[in-house]
Length: 141
Image (tube, rainbow, N blue to C red; front, side, top):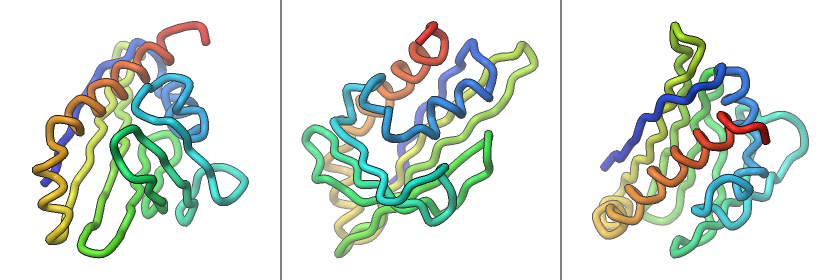
């Protein structure tokens, strides 16, 4: 089960990438994240891991499996019966802005069940994250 949201941001993709790829700062602009702890130092890259805590969801460790600097990254969390894939895709627009697509897919026997159970919560979290990212990137901060 995959859920996603897209948002257009009136900021260049470089600015959006800087904010989005600084995962440890997410709690500054989205209420859906209470902490992100990088498990390695340095820039986000394939193999980077982070422990993410969110309200009403168990703390989860994600590993970056795909990354195209300035354009996208995908990270995956696995556990017994569940495989969660979160994608973060940027598309530069002709007007100098950026379209961002955020998506979460739940797979596996438990993942399918969790996806249905958390569907409304996931939709709200994606919407909050998209709006928080937009506000952060379009603001001065």
